[in-house]
Length: 206
Image (cartoon, rainbow, N blue to C red; front, top):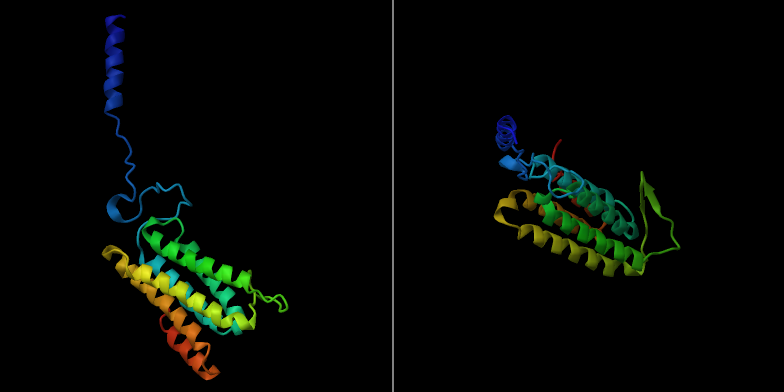
């Protein structure tokens, strides 16, 4: 190899070694703005007030709407509420425990509605959602299952690491409001409306 060629090769190697390599650190800077390494949907990562506020609003407004339906339709309505909440957190690793908790409530309600479906009654529709009724005799049992699932989700959120408590506690409060509405369905109509109005105050203002 000629002296000229050896010098050119050495210069190319030195230039390559000095070329900056892009950082692959996930969520660099702590603001959740880094490139996602999860291979998921590409949703932004990190805790934000906007994300937490959106989930709380989904739970509280959705729960209030479900409480106004006939009792046999409420459980499938709540299933949709928790599905939407779960979807809002999907792909954001900071909210992974909350997302799994919401998804578990959805699965519990989905199974309960399927097992106790009242095929003699029509479904109710709201936009793209359809609410399936359960048999009236199954209401007490499904109510207990729904409350237990929500309690488990609430406990999971409240036992989260301290760095997640600020956001998870707000979501847990919204889950608890759903349990209150489920129980209030056994009260006279005027008290149900009162409970719904009080819980509506938990909805974040946009």
